[in-house]
Image 1 (tube, rainbow, N blue to C red):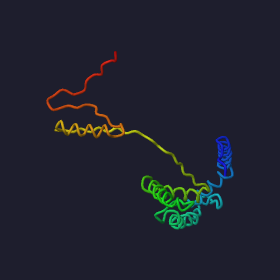
Image 2 (cartoon, helix red, strand yellow):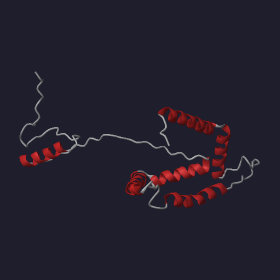
Image 3 (spheres, rainbow, N blue to C red):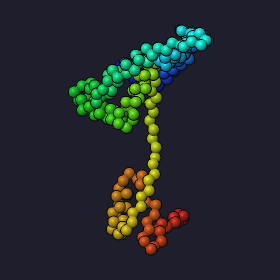
Image 4 (cartoon, helix red, strand yellow):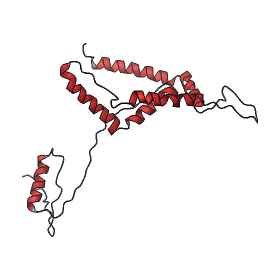
Length: 191
């Protein structure tokens, strides 16, 4: 199968987005979602209006059904160690597929609240006919400061050597011996 061009992908995604927005914003769907939430909460006043001074009907059938389905659906989607599994295309892909499976399952279930994401996604789908999960990748830099006391010159040299051998993300801000001035010299301008 030939690769899809960027413009084809953009136009396909734009069409899908337009269809999704049209479906979500439709008045009929919005009314059905509101009715479904009322039924879930046991509110029957739309279908069974009450007379003044009389008690009103309450039915929790929808809530009972949704809550009764949730354990079974969660068992299907999150009941095993593998929420997702990559299938190898050929025998040479088996090790890579197993590693990808392990990694994605670890990221989804351990580094993220995977169980709760699935739970809210499935429950939203049952109640409002649409379950949505937002996914993003976030990169950030962290700065940590460490202070070492009572290092000998040899220990400091060993520490500085290990810092220089790293990827360069670590830097020594100051080196001070007890009772001495900081060992940070101002940079001389190049002549």
